[in-house]
Image 1 (tube, rainbow, N blue to C red):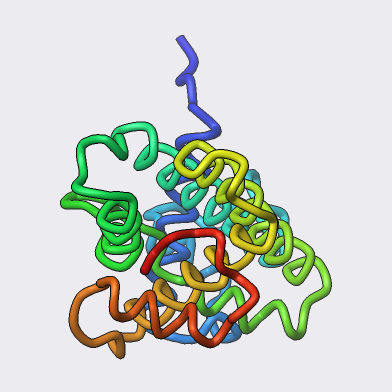
Image 2: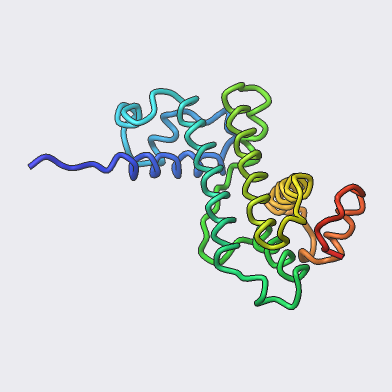
Length: 200
């Protein structure tokens, strides 16, 4: 009886191996042979799933977009505003999740490298833009669920910027302290036109 191979599982295994390679060297220096070695497979076998590195990188970008969107949506589904003292505390808890994740959550490790690569690769640039636009659309949906029609497109863009900044700073180990109302107020003070979300 022939061995049944789950292609999606194999692709996920390759993307994880790619991510592990990126903890050791920059994205420009990682080869398909490096990735195959980490995935414990031959180079020709890897080529059955990704014909070249560009295709693999685009699949990784899509993985990042889907992971972050699904997990942010899940957070809002699992946490109800009425279980917090007020909406500020609720949004602070969400931003704390953005910064730290939850126990056992294996977040993508190489998002920042893909953002840099977008500067040099038009296809990656398109994928990264799609990623940020999907965050913005998700934030509009989630914020409307919390604040009603008071939430605006500008608010969702503000949250997209805030999430990206917090995520990147935490990723690089430069975010000090905890996410709190003070930090949110300081950020909001830089954007005086965004007032509809009552973080203050």
